[in-house]
Structures are given as C-alpha cells and as structure tokens.
Image (cartoon, rainbow, N blue to C red; front, side):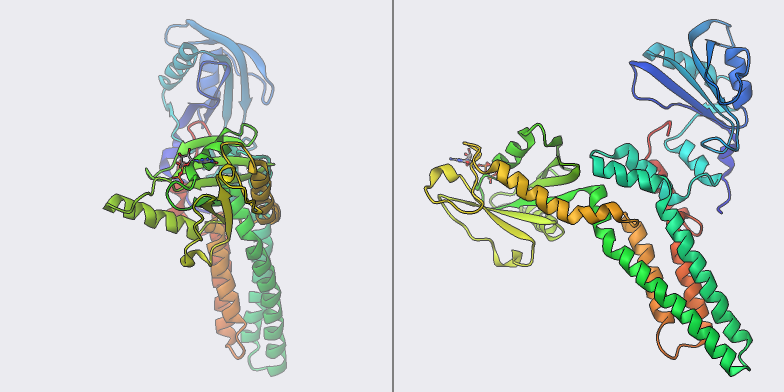
Length: 440
Ligand code: GDP
C-alpha cells in the first residue's frame, strides 16, 4: 500500500450535502481531532454510531448556532478509517457558514479538498482504487443502468476479481519458480512448468473474456455515442433539437466543449446515449470550419452509430470514407416528398421520430447490455488488463525459459495491481480524486 501523505494529519471538515439553501445540511469531519471537535461544539460526545439531538455552539462565543443531530463514528470502522463525525443542521446558507467558520477556528481543523474524504478511505485501505472510481461514477450516474454498474464497482466487484486473478498468478509463479529450484530433476521441473503454463492459459482466457465485455462497460459509463452527420441544411440541428425536446428522453442538452458540436444526453430506458450534432460545420470556408469538420469526422470515427441525414428534397448519399462507420441513412424532411423510406423523418410533422428513437434505443441496448456484467469499465482498467494479457501471452510462447515465465507472470500481476491501486498508481491518483466534489 502507498504511504499516507503528511497532509492527512489534519482533521478535515466539509459540507457533504448539496448547495444550500436546503431542508437539511450535512457537515462531515474526519481526523484525529473529530471527538474533541464534537465536544467543543456540542458540549459532549454522543454515544458512537447513534444519532443524538444536539445544540451546536460556537466555542469562541458560546452562542448557539443551530440545533440538529450529531453523529460520532470512531475509526477504524468508519467510512474513512479515521474518527468521523457528522452534524445534521438546518440547510440555510448562514447556518452552514457559521458552522464551518466555528469548526475551522478550532486548532488542527481545516476545510477539506475535493475528494479528500474518499482519498483517506483509500489510504486507510477501506476502499481500493476501482471502488473509489465506482463511487465517483455513482455520484455522476444519470441513468438506472449506470447506477447499477457504478454501485457494483463501488462495492468492490472489480477489486475482488483482481484479487482472484492475482492469487491465480501467484500460484502459477510459485510453480514456475519451483521448476527452477528442481532444474536438476528434469521430470519434476517439466511438470511444474507445465502446470504453471496451464494456470497462465486459464487466466488468459478469463482476462480476454473480461476485455471482450469492457467496451460495453465503458460505453455504459460514458453513454452510447450517436453522431449526426449530413450536408448543410439536411436538418441535423432540427433533429437534435427535436430529440432534446422529447422530455421523457432528455437528461441534459448543453453546448459541447468545442464551439461547433452540440451534445444532447438521452436516457433511453436506462441506457445513456449522447447525440452529437455537427451542424456547426458548414461551408468549409475558413480554418475554423475546416477544424470543425476534422472534429466531426474524428467524432464519427469513434461513434457507436452515425446517422447520415439525407434530405428528401435533395437526396445526398453518404461519402465513401464513412463506409466503415456504423452508418444509418435517415431521410429527412419527409413532409416534402411523397416517397417513403425505412427511416424517414420529419421534424416539422414529427413523423418517424418515435421510430428513430426506438431504433437508437435498440442499438444502444444491444451495445450496452453486456456492459452491466462488465467489470473492466474504464480505459484505465482495460489498458492494465491488456498489459497483463500481453505478459501472459509471452509466458505461454512455447520454449520460453522458466525464468522468463516467472518474470512475465510477475509483470502480469503488477499490471493488474494498478487497477486496484496496490502498485504504482501515484500518477493517476490526483486525477481520480479531483473528479469528486468537496465533502466526498
Ligand atoms: P442542418 O444544417 O443540417 O443543421 O439543418 P437545419 O436543422 O438547420 O435545417 C435546415 C432547414 O431545413 C431549416 O430551414 C429547417 O427549418 C428545415 N427543416 C428541418 N427539418 C425539416 C423537416 O422535417 N421538414 C421541412 N420541410 N423542413 C425542415
């Protein structure tokens, strides 16, 4: 386990509930001074793990700030592994501000940074890194399928799987090393090496199967990606706006990070989809437009579904370089033509829109359904598993020496260890914890 940073000596405090005003505000603190801090505000320490009614006073003036519930959760069996306390007060801005002000005036108590409670839980060994990521996903989950996947991750499914894989590797390594120790007894050595390789081969299959499902898992986290392409005036913006107006489907509609791409996040029966409108890309006159077109193409390349919009009054076939993409041609402005095609829509009359949404839902479900059973749900997990798989494959090359088999098995175990944060993850920690809000 990685060493605990020095900064963790402080007792940290933060508003853990949503932005005030609200009915109730939850203020959390964690650290060695938690108990004396509770005493300083409440005049006493409530019995562990029992909510008690308390009157909170500013220790400097003895003035009552508010009345509410106080909870004391002694470590190490607490969420962070340290002594933890919670104050449930009225969720007014002035109440929360006065509580935080009184608390941080106490020696050794300071405001928490984002993700710092979770960071402490990780360093105390209460959660592995994959579970920490699951918790971040749970807080960010928009749809039901995302929530289920995040909950499984937060409860440690991936950590448990990785622990099992690493114990299988350890066994195979012991056998490979035994074959080195008994090198002068040919039969014993050959037999041990054989068994080590059989173990590595079984594991290779398991990891390959997990990798097969990982795309669905990653997509479930991020959303099924639909990109809307077509010539200028094909009706791209009109379609994306029409989807955005379907109140049942919409989660959020926001301008994308680039000025040309508009994204609409849809909840399709629990499966998340992100529909990207590329309408900002018109006449490729200036550099900005050229850059926009490049981005739209790049977006189409890693899309799960590309809708090519062809207006019924000016049919335009998709460009040849899109033939590799998961393409579906959609005829737009159906109201302008008597001709009907399998996928024809009109944003003016609403014709075909329900069918189009059903089609996208169906595709999304097919892509994401496997995701619910996936344990590798982030690019970070997938990349580590791919490194482990590569090492196992090297160990299985016929004629490889027992020394190399043992070394490759060690490398496979190390790669898997990165998933749970057992080894060499200093570089990703900052990024993972900064994704949390303050108070988490
Ligand atoms: P984009 O450039 O592909 O984003 O196209 P827009 O969505 O901006 O639409 C271009 C023009 O076509 C606008 O004047 C729209 O009002 C019109 N339009 C869009 N959808 C329809 C439709 O279903 N029927 C008809 N008749 N016109 C449409």
